[in-house]
Image (cartoon, rainbow, N blue to C red; front, side):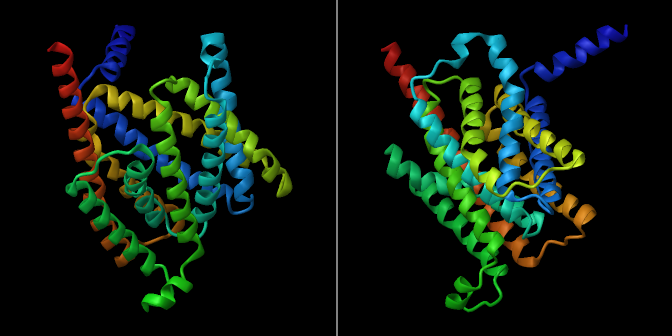
Length: 319
């Protein structure tokens, strides 16, 4: 009887449906916020370069047995140069992110994490030649306004010129990281049509590990057993985020899940308050109020555009 119940429960998690998609996307938000906490805990003593290296090294070690089980075909790629570039972008992004996490409240970290689509959109116009309607352009500009509110709130002055000179270094690191994440997303869009998700994930972990080996060696500090456990969980969490995202997108439409991505801000505020005694400022909350609808609108129009494109291609194929 117990075994039958377990099988039934497992079947529910694998079944397509709205509730299943919401479950997986909330797990993504929880793991992402937990990874930020792990970076904060290890970053009290270990350099950000070393943390970034271990994050991808453990991710690589976890994926390697899976790749070997899949066979030689899983390792085949026609774009080794682009995988190296993805590794450079990924390591730089995570290194900046790790450095910024230790300097600003988790609520700010989580809010700025939501702004990656805002940087992807203008890059898609330049590098992918995508057409952007006025709705997505307006949402992007609104989102950048939210970023400006948060950034200005972390400066030491509210004068327009002086605030640029007195910006919190951690905020600048996080913004730089989001730009690099956006560049990586653009590169992923170019590659995903001819590369499997597992192959891209594996070479991303391998490339970032190689790129981070020398910087980590230069600033090396011997991790404690506890820190190694944190770093291993960090690497496993990075893989789990992608796995849960794929499960969520397989369960229901991306547009239906977009509002639940912002649960991460709730987890960040909760962890920040309980673990680090951080209370979100009014400027952080105001920036979040502006950014969340903006990124949601972009996700909505992006999904609608993809559906219309798929319908057009289907009609052309049938005619």
